[in-house]
Amino acid sequence: MDITSRPLQVTDAQAVLEVYRKIAAHPGGFIRAEEEVDLDYIQGMLENTVGTGLGMCAHDLTTGELVGFITARKPGPKAFEHVLAKLTIGVLPTYQSKGIGRRIFFDFLEAIDASRPDVLRVELIVRESNVKAIAFYESIGFRREGSFEKRIRRPNGEFETDIPMGWLKPGI
Ligand SMILES: CC(C)(COP(=O)(O)OP(=O)(O)OC[C@H]1O[C@@H](n2cnc3c(N)ncnc32)[C@H](O)[C@@H]1OP(=O)(O)O)[C@@H](O)C(=O)NCCC(=O)NCCS
Image (tube, rainbow, N blue to C red; front, side):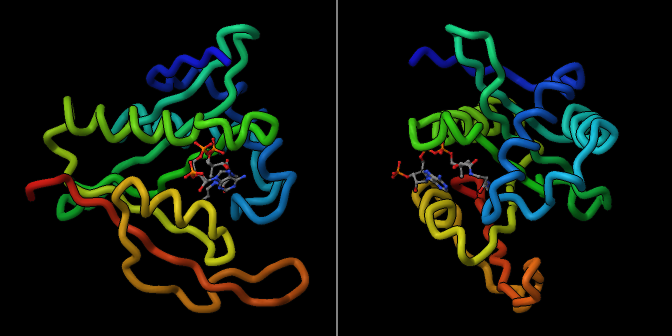
């Protein structure tokens, strides 16, 4: 499969929304449910990402379709100017487990290394049951930084722990 990656733009909002909704239709990945995501939400996310953070997406070169994305943005306060937070990564279900998530995350961290001296830390939060994603993040240098107990309430009423993870730029 021929895949290419490039920086995300606000004009990608509709394509990102479609990918987001297809992923959110399967429980266990994103926290936000399919009906909690609309074009306004995605546009806001991309405006923040382009304005303060960094976003990448992957295209299938054969179909031209946007098949995966990663976004992260600055939290706001000056004390957190070196931080990219609220990281979201998603790959279309039919394209998962083919190396696309690893590729866009690698390109994202490489872009931070190469051209974002202002960014020293990247953080994300992942549900404890998403063991494949946690193993993936650990394999690219993220470390567990604690646990937010009972942070998630599943549709059946059960609670789940959320795991904060952080990546520090090598050498800081
Ligand atoms: C997590 C996710 C972005 C990984 O992207 P991917 O393209 O499927 O991953 P890759 O094929 O590049 O594989 C990288 C690692 O991801 C993990 N992974 C693979 N398929 C996965 C899946 N269906 N769900 C979760 N993690 C998966 C594996 O640990 C894999 O490691 P390996 O290469 O050592 O086997 C993707 O599976 C996804 O969109 N999942 C649903 C949304 C989600 O969980 N987002 C993260 C919320 S914090």
